[in-house]
Image 1 (tube, rainbow over the protein chains, first blue to last red):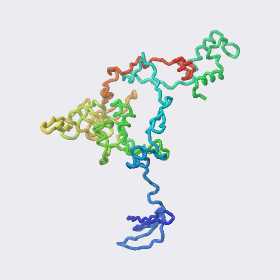
Image 2 (image 1 turned 90 degrees about the vertical axis):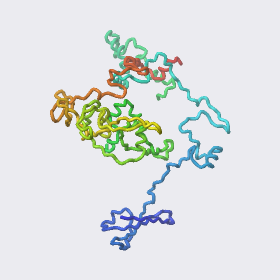
Image 3 (image 1 turned 180 degrees about the horizontal axis):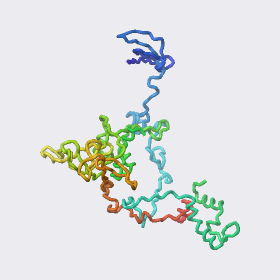
Length: 200
Length: 238
């Protein structure tokens, strides 16, 4: 089926597509998406010419915005020259993810020491682990530690010993509590917050 | 997953043999036409990249593969196989070509194209290193053979090619059985070979490899401390 597109601009700003299509034995006009006017039939070579209007916009809303952001090396020579002197507020200089270590005051650059990243590398003397693992090693699967495991590592030994030796008082509280056992929830939270951690 | 998506993916044997991490292979194969800038909110996170690759004799993370896949070529139809029956070091009989009837060892497998390269068979000769005065050297290069109809596994009992099926033994082990005689064709040891080692136990440990003893050591002692508290005490910042 042949379709010829003609674009006309209306006062309201919409662009209508007027399709001139010739059809052969077209049964259901409702199948077509475009709104059809009264078909004015012209027969040419045994085929019928039918006029219609499509109310969908020309490009179906598709636009190519891929080259839209005019970063550092994009743009005309004039534009780049103007940007170098006085960058336009809407087109800031793109740093590609590099974080600033200061700010520019006029022509000079003011460095702020607190913005300079400080990389803390621990002392690796006597460190046995190396970048790669030998193929001879069998796959070790260690799931993440659960709270039960932590409890087991910190409290279980003392509790079992106390129980065997009968050092548990009424209500099964320890008679001689260890530092961890004597810690109350409020005290524990205070200790944690005192070191400026992000636990709320 | 669509069959086409499954076929355009790299096969498991290729990643196993190379010992390369999957993330590296993905990164090396990537051919991005355009990617939306991540810092601009008006763009949806869209990446226009090449999805369908034509697998060749070169490995997918190599530069030669990239060059071969830069332009769009005619589509290649690969028969999807349920199970893969050929392994490195298998004895196979060539069924087509001028080496028809000959038996050779499988040296290379390219599962993505159902290919198998037999050592020394189905060869052609080509000249390399040709300059203006020097005619170059002739080298022998094996052409790949299709696993479906150009090659057959050799039955060790009668030294002839047979059709093979995967069956289970009484013990529950999955084995290859020759359809003609019913004998089991064992999987060769070199099937588990990789580019770095022939067997894991025989791998020579290098300078930068961590030994088994160091890895399995338990150095972490769980304590009821937060990470920050532990660091404070370690560096004595209190």
